Length: 392
Image (cartoon, rainbow, N blue to C red):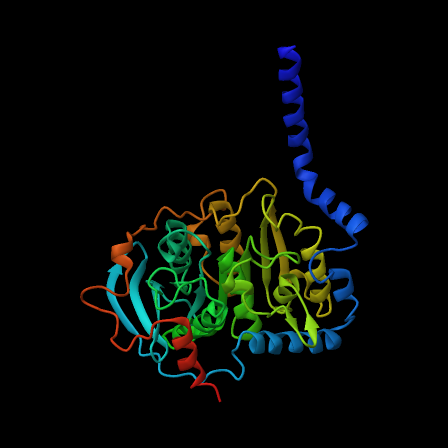
């Protein structure tokens, strides 16, 4: 009896093992036939709204404007002085790091770490923004530091920065409906900061982040044309938009003249290079069979099918681990002209061992020598009142 139960358990788990690679296909097949949908907004219906680049661009403009309006960023706030402070310069292995804070708008501060290459590429250093997801340590995570530092070692200037209400961005909590407003504005202003630095190439800009950082990637790309390459990791789905106020706390997916989802928002990047990185253990498990083909069709309007890719890790989980970083390195290095070869081993993998993982205290933008400015405004409502004074 016990042997029979044991063998049944073994057979059950073996069957799960065999089925696993096909799980996403099975999920899509069931959804299409029994529920008549391919995700929030129904990708089949959305696809019927445009059949060429002209029709798509009309739709694209509607969504881009809708995101700005429903994110409470229309009209776009006047861009005030950044008043950036760089300090605590450190020299590492082929790159440097500095702690930075600057003014998003008067009274509201953004904290960053900027990673610079020790050598210059012809034409100036490309820029890579690395927004983080809802991890415990945010920009202080070892893998986030590794990502930015490795891009710097290839010749880029990379930046990590706090989510609203996380890390040193503590002038309001993260769990507010205005988190999306402030966070999207932060990303645009981080890009302003980076393009203001000497020696950069403002025509070579990439953005990549995981989970909530993936949301920030596609949202920034939607409202700021300066981003030329986007790599959202374990995030893009037509049926799920994040579930956090910083991602869907405001009705950016549903305006009076449109209804959309994150797959279509990611497609707003067309025809610029876009890489979707997905895995088999979260809402991106159907990317190869649902979101990716949908986005590919839009890229075909421009004859730019080679500019969009999907790398899927069937056995992967919701993270930005070394395997996923390797794919991001290759894609971004190719499109920005980074010197990836100097870091690749015989197997073509980027060697990350030259990165120094720093402790949080070393990376703080605000410390005893550089205290938070006294004009800091606290509380979501107070920050929004201040922000509205710059909208005209």
